[in-house]
Image (cartoon, rainbow, N blue to C red; front, side, top):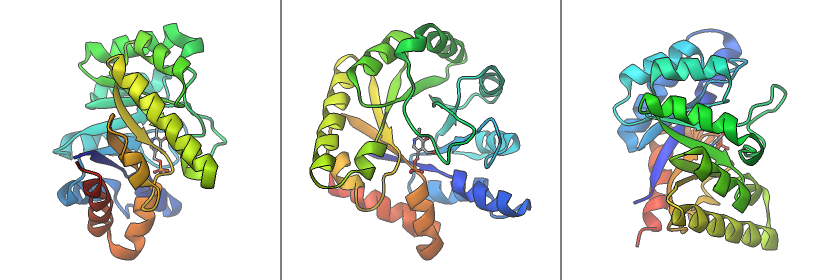
Length: 240
Ligand code: PXP
């Protein structure tokens, strides 16, 4: 069955809104694991707007599944990753003003930078995923950079309607196949929810989905355990 990694950043967003200790993202991560998540994702942003350094260290100690640290490829954050040693680092572009990660990485035009960061992480046995738009040039560059995974940006698909959504889905399928063919493992995420996940989960080459906002939003109404289980049910429906 395809795997679900739960992004717990939004639990930290709620905590930071009050500057207190609750709700605790690490507790959320443990609940998500018990509910069946294959891993936990958290994004340590340069501005520390939600997840804090201490959360990442605690996640590393407490998780029984897998810690996927989402981060920009900057010196400060790379050094933290080398100290924390998550199971997987997902490198993403980061802009201070953005509400969320907006586009994929331009690996092709900064190949030597991404290769050197990937090499450093590999020396600590940390797997590396590059978050890219579903385009050929970036897939080829990710392979050249030595990445283990690409995470295909599903945001365009998630925002599209009608024929445009069908075209975006086809673009994701083609990209997943192209990446898989050259030996990259394929994850996907951004903007996925209870309505649009199923179609993209039918793409055989994608092994894992990274989902945060819609799942945590749903959890406000039904509880986190049920929200995770309902997302897993959708993945189960695509098994064949
Ligand atoms: N994958 C990446 C690389 C992301 O940056 C995000 C957003 O933090 C997600 C997945 C999850 O997106 P969403 O919160 O829309 O489910």
